[in-house]
Length: 156
Image (cartoon, rainbow, N blue to C red; front, side):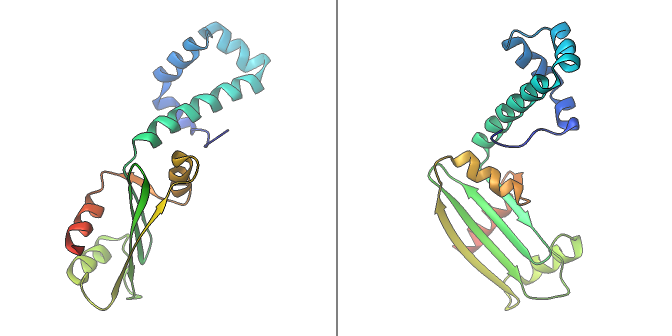
């Protein structure tokens, strides 16, 4: 498996897509029921292949990721050729960027000495979607990039 199996909830959300996927494999509803009971390992493989297809489609379209922790923000812009990073570190131990109070403090104090910034970029490895997935595995979430774009403007 290249990525990660979709959760039960994700598979339920993608129920119709999974049915269509099985149809492309020439597996009928009746055959699927039989597979699940008589050859569960084959059924598991089909779910894994479907999961990889979904991840591949999602990751190929992702442009922005965010990973926000108590005192750090890692904002990624995933361009065609490289991953760009805007990193923010808050040195006020009383602030938690994951809370409204903490984030409001940050918006008021983003230019203070209590906030450090770092920018970096990195070329993709052999498979850019695998690189993107590594960021997701580390806790990054897919976004529209509003925060990254805001920072990009204020840093110019």
